Image (tube, rainbow, N blue to C red):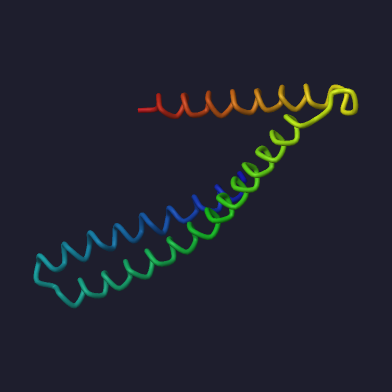
Length: 117
């Protein structure tokens, strides 16, 4: 999941480049240099399209992985609630402890992110 996030962050360079081409296009058009402005608009559109493709492909993988994780945890909860402790031993307890640790980590991560300026 981390690798996919790194790949999607690489698209940020193209996004910034596209924004700078857009600013140059506005500047050139305000100066009456429409030909150069149109060229900059074309470059901005190309870079923006590339940034979208580079960012969306890895992010769709992240969403797929998170969906699978949610399905696995949901299935685990369903199985743990139906489990017979005499047959499973301490596996049910271990599952609930791991689920609690995972939930606490998600909660702390969300709290940490909301405190960022």
